[in-house]
Image (cartoon, rainbow, N blue to C red; front, side, top):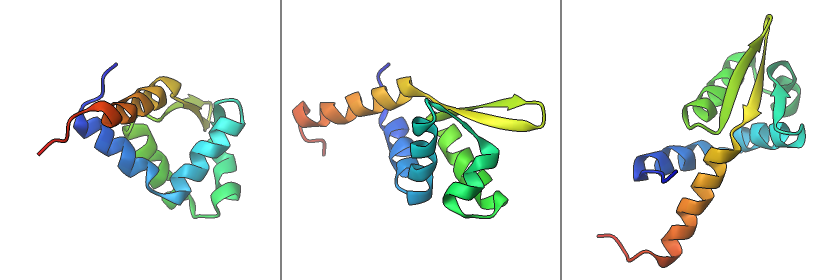
Amino acid sequence: MVLTFKQIEKISKALGDSHRLKILHYISGKGGCGECSALQDIIELAQPSISHHVKILVEAGLIEGEKEGRNYSYHLNSQTLNDYLDALKQFETSPVLK
């Protein structure tokens, strides 16, 4: 899928925060699926702050949530990440926009 400039911007902003990068790193290290309850131990923030960061990652399409009973787990959206990397590679060969 070809991403729009707006989608590229949204993903770039989502990746521009160390807490969100830690969340993605955790989920990736767990085979692409991580429990929401474990995130508090990893990034040492209050639950409302964690929810805020997770929401930004979900809105950017980088992770997807799944409710399991009372708990949530999050899955890495590899397709969005690959599309983003492909879009960035296109900047190497694209003419300069004005």
